[in-house]
Amino acid sequence: MADKYIYLFLSFYLLVLWLMIIIFRKDLVRKVIKASIGGGFAGLIAEVWYFVDYWQPPSLAGVSSVSIEDFLFGFCITGIAVSIFDVTFCKKIRDEAKDRKGVFFILFLCGLISLLVFNNWLGINSIFVSSMAFIVISVIMILIRRDLFLPSIISGILTVIVIIPIYLLLYNWLSPDYWMRYWLLYDTEYGITVLGNIPVTEIIWYFSWGCLAGAGYDFASGKIKV
Image 1 (cartoon, rainbow, N blue to C red):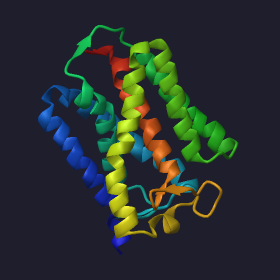
Image 2 (image 1 turned 120 degrees about the horizontal axis):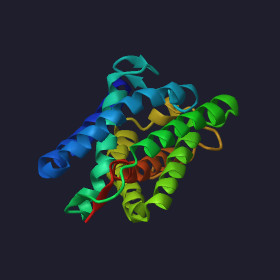
Image 3 (image 1 turned 90 degrees about the vertical axis):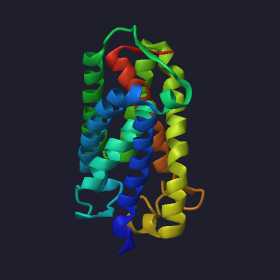
Image 4 (image 1 turned 60 degrees about the vertical axis):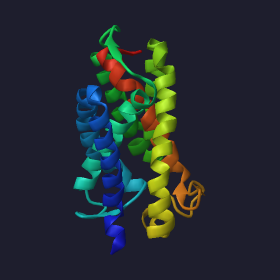
């Protein structure tokens, strides 16, 4: 029964970090909220693929059912990833670059199309397709805006760092058999874990999403970090 609340505990942990950011960096509130809303809906959409071939977790809505946790998780992790570089290293953001919302939207659509092609058609696991799409989109944005290289890479690294403590607590202590039960890659060649029971695929996903979020908002809105 405790497994039912693991995803919720993870989301609440991220919510605490999210609240700390908007409380202590009020200049980032607009940025964080806008990105978080988009991330929340992306979290709901992503499960259409992840439930099929990556994981089937229990939640308040049932096993492998789209739930409030999906939205809350996507909402919070996106808000954190989009601002974690600013919180750590950046004091001000200026409007000095070209607005590229249209380009970003096209890149987002290409990411969705890649899931349809490489996952639905070619059968490559959704976690690898989505993570690779995040990295490719990040690289394209960096090639257009070279100043976003460090924010993107460091955001990816910091996103992994902030998630490690709660993963250690949840999956090494509260529910050490969680991934064995609900992870569809368990006992396959891709079922590699580190630091106890943390799947490598999870670390790859957080890093790639952090890279995308760390560059995406500033790329789309024409912001420059100073």
